Image 1 (spheres, rainbow, N blue to C red):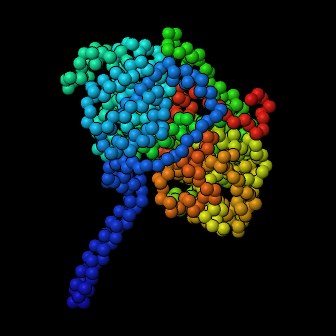
Image 2 (image 1 turned 135 degrees about the vertical axis):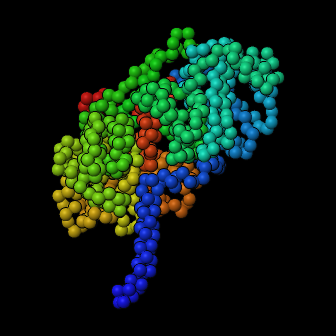
Image 3 (image 1 turned 30 degrees about the vertical axis):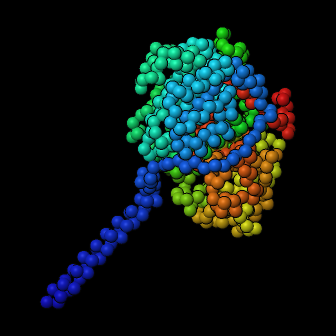
Length: 586
């Protein structure tokens, strides 16, 4: 009888208890899933499509006075390209204003058509008025960024009287509304334009059929793009201009090691990215690396001799300023991060070490270390301490400087050497993006990366990490705790800006740093920076060192633009070294 009473009393309660436990367990699983990589993927997937919003702003102008522009000037005079933008709505009208501030300035003449004029009447008007000063007509959508020097290099090999055209179709993708419709870019020779008008090709809807009887040039340089949308990741919906290049590298036999030589255009470019590309192509450069270029063939509009690549200064600095690069990553990111960084910016380090918390397969040229630490953003301080201890114990005599970076940071190590060459490894000093939100907080941004001298590393390990002046716990905000510890060790945060007050270490993407109004005026970065951020193009140094929030695919594209593809004909100049190297005559 007593046993029966107990069974009746506990059974309903036990059932409720089990149900409650299952619900709590399920909620915990959902929470952990949301914090993990799968959860982040789901959040990205359910976000609304990216739609470009164009606003008015001015990034200013900037000249590189040390560049040799003789070749580009010759091409400008001999290969006369008129540009046409056909605008149909207010979105395109606003965006055209940014084109006029960027690549549009390099057209021999810019034509802007607004309203519902037919393409035939527009072409007729341009031809009738400018026949004598037009060799080629470039007709592009406002979503394309055109490298005019590369276009002239391609066209200089042809005669404008020939019937030649280039054409590239760019499909619209519903989740990346950079372009609001399908678009096609054209390049037409004067001869082709003349024949299109003479044959009354525009009197029919299929005027492009007339092009079939003409010679087609290398249209792949305009990056035609029409592939199944399922192939494209949602992660880069707001950076869609990357994808024609990335897709070609991944899904063809070109790969990232065989980039397309002298591309003419990047489609799917937002207004903000027009200005970012302007900085990447015409201002940012790796120090000590003088780009080469092929000669134009005999019979071209201009005879320009070949120029060989000259990286002798960079190679000498490589020997004089030795840098160990320390990249901290997570086990699930290791495979793609280690390979990407090794094939891009990491190969310019004197030694590259990738730190994770799990044993990984070593890749060629990558030294991999599995740290005995727990993973998690809140535990990054413990991981960073372990990484510096390992480097000091095993590699401190192999380098003069020790650079710590996140796995989504792109670094231009040649520019780091340029900044460091006038400093000595025995100085107790470190460089980075200086944060100073209040009088008690003084440190370098972790996302932008920071670099310690050998003496700073020695003090950190021998006098700092085991002392009461440094956080001995594994948890803590990594960059803040590092600043507290280095200050305790008597290590001074150095001014990393260039002589113009431009920043070299970027804690955010170039777009967020460069574009006026991209960040709200009350954004945290403005309160954290120790040195004011200049407006527009003046924000960032010609010899910038790091850019944060760069996805691994984008690192290949950045490397391509900086080291393999400079606008044709521009011979980039460099500032003189403050301390002349013995083996280099500048």
